[in-house]
Image (cartoon, rainbow, N blue to C red; front, side):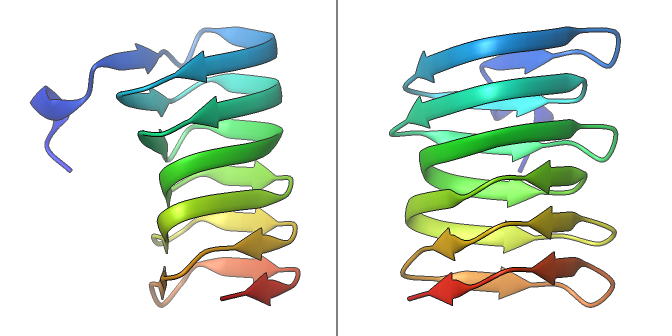
Length: 106
C-alpha cells in the first residue's frame, strides 16, 4: 500500500492503550494495547507491536500482533510478521517468512 494513501499513522515513539474506532486507513508503527474496530484498513508496520482484539475490514501485518482478528475483507501477513491469535476472514494471504500461531476460520 502506498504511504500517501494512509490517512493516519501512530509513530514508533507512541504507546497507546484503549479502544480505537476509525473508518479509513490507519498504520501503527508504535505500540498499541486494547481493541480496534474499523470498516477500513489497519496496517501494522514492521516496527509495530500490537496486543489487541481487532474487528476490521482489511488487516495487513508486517510487525507483531497478539490477539484475535475478525476481518471482513482479507488478512495479509507480510514477511517478517508474527501473528499469535485466532483469525476469521474470507481471504488470507501469507507471505513466506511470516509466522502465524492460532486457528483460522474462512
